[in-house]
Image (cartoon, rainbow, N blue to C red; front, side, top):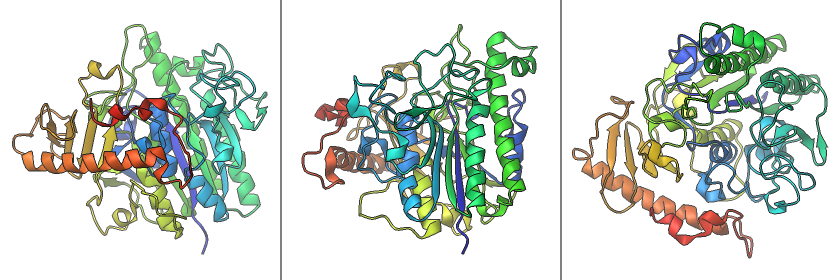
Length: 463
């Protein structure tokens, strides 16, 4: 049987309301809209966390980010003991490639790079080529979205392997620069008759938000900041269209999964900034556990299972990438470590509309107060609990997301049993995350986590 090719595409800080298929009437996303028309849209799909680094780890491991110790952006690094989707598929005969933002550890121990890369933090070295990826074109952090090697705040290079980084074809639109590497990788796999996993993680529309002149001109009636933000999204959209066309031209469309989403909600708006992302009216933004921080625009094109124009309203998560794919390919995990996501195949096959496992969120940030966001949340199908405590009801919120996606009516008084049940579940999960975090899944003597923030025992009790 021919193996399914897998392409996971993710944007950085793209809001739920930033795409035409989710109702945006200003930003031009015709190629994403076409992808949605040819596949299915998830209306309640969640990033694993309301910021980028933790979410990216959930995509690759299927595990909650507190298990592997990446609790925030630029915190910790992906432990080499984690099992990734790339390593599993590589062992199953797949070619594997990562293109774009990595943000799960540093990519060099030799020279200054990104926020943390270089000799100063050797313990943070955790590049994609040590996690199952053969072909790489990867940066540690976000970079400018136009002429990406110029005017960089963190001087991050595009690394292609240990001690190697790209030096040519780095001008113009960053999304195009990334796709210029991803498509040749796919073409090579076709020539060699190899199944492949391509992880394409765009930087757009994360700051520094800079669009090229032709893209700004498309939005000339708007402010300068809006021109740049909208233009970056449209430039990225063009590259999704280019990818979709290439799959058709290469005869891959029928046997390839394309799964597109964002890593969290849009950045907070500031008067002087260029962060004009939209949540589509959802409460909160990036760094918030309200829906606007975690609900992301999501499209799945997979002809084997997804009929054109399908809409899914069952909750999904980036935690589900790995379990869905190993279910599809019949790959078993090599050990019994906990996996927090679920396979979505029963949903895609029409066997169920219920989620069999709640989605847990845990996030602490100094900027939480800008949204009044609690630090814990649990989604169990239609209902969601938000809380700052695991064992008491003080300040809890419960929302029926099926009827109230904007989280405007707190139903905690009517749903006390649900709140109690979810607090109990949350408490058990946090204890298990703690066990994993301190090496309980690795069977390795003396393991200690890199991220010392979580090494503080008090960080587990909700204070």
